[in-house]
Amino acid sequence: MSTGYESGGSISTQSTTSSSKKFAAFPVQNFVLVKHVKDNPDVEKGLLFIGTFIQHINDEDGILAGSFEGESMEGFPYRLNDEAGGDFTNVRRVQETACKNDSQTKKEVKTYKITYDVKAPLDIDHYFEGFPCGIMKARLSIELSALTSKCCESKLQPNLCIDTTNKSSNIAIQKNNLLLDTDKVLKKTYNKDGEIIIPKSGENKDLLEQIRNKMDRSNFYEFVTPIPKVTYILKGDNCSKLLIDFYFVESGVAKFVKVLSPMMLICWLNWFHVQTNKKQSERGDGAGREYLGNSAAFALTVVFLFESIIPKSRRERGFLTINSMYLMLVFTALILSSIPADFMAKEVGTVGALLFFASFLLPIYDYW
Image (cartoon, rainbow, N blue to C red; front, side, top):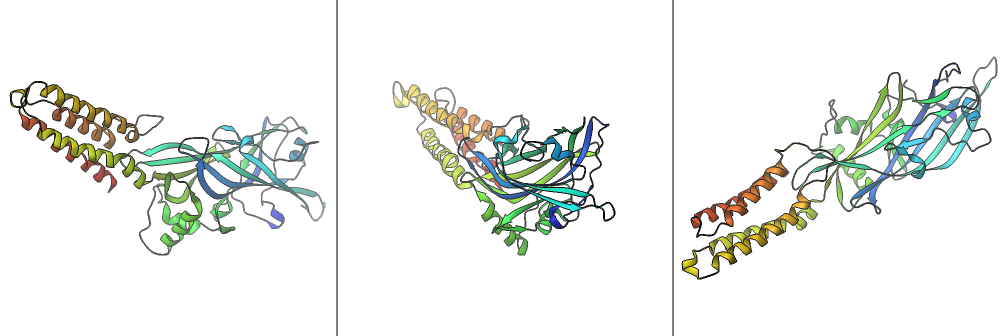
């Protein structure tokens, strides 16, 4: 299944399709050039993948060309994130080359190199839920769809030819209009279990920083690593799908300004508020109601801020997470702080205020 490039832009795999089968595996080499990732103006905090796809096809028996008889040659159609890729891909050019396959028979084999411009939305979900800096996974699922041949009764099922020795011939990152060989970087970016390794120093870190500056065009997110994780999906003996995963965190400065700063302000105001907690006999009529009203205002403000803390995810990650524990700790602190001195000792409110301060240890622990 492994293949590389030959002269003329063809691939070193011969077509072995058969019209007697309902689905005939048709070898194709699909190269992915990653240019950059930017914000999606149509989706709040959405991301767009900008890149180029190139299909290399050997049409030995003319079966594929026959499937587009009377139409422009566009190769195997794409499905991106399980949706028709026609709205996200555009054929830039089609290059056709005829070469001799056999010196004796002098049989001509047509090879095609089809280049697509790609601008596709990424599917974003939480990979790790943490506060203030959770990790998001942005995925692009690429699948080549089958074609119905007009020359025979078979459906042509694309079978990706993957080069296992030179991974940059399968997918590469564009850097200053040149293809960057990422094989060495990949070995130091992901371990054998597919877990991310963050480089601490040296040449590899400098290279990653250069790639990050090229790749990152988002104002909302920062790359954990600019090198994507690539997974090929094998079904039986056929492979027609791959997944490209990017990992991001929300900007730490944005989180601090939007959430942590207001929470710290509420924490200090709550502390000063608790110090004014006195019995009604000491402060006069209506003191208890005024104290409860101020406590309710603090609680409502915190509830609005919690919307930015709770991650939007398609599935539950469990109850006892750092986020949930932080929320419960803050609510417990506000409940204790809101109890007037007429009902319990003033020290109970002081404990609640101190608990509010202690709740900030969880985000600090989660960050480090």
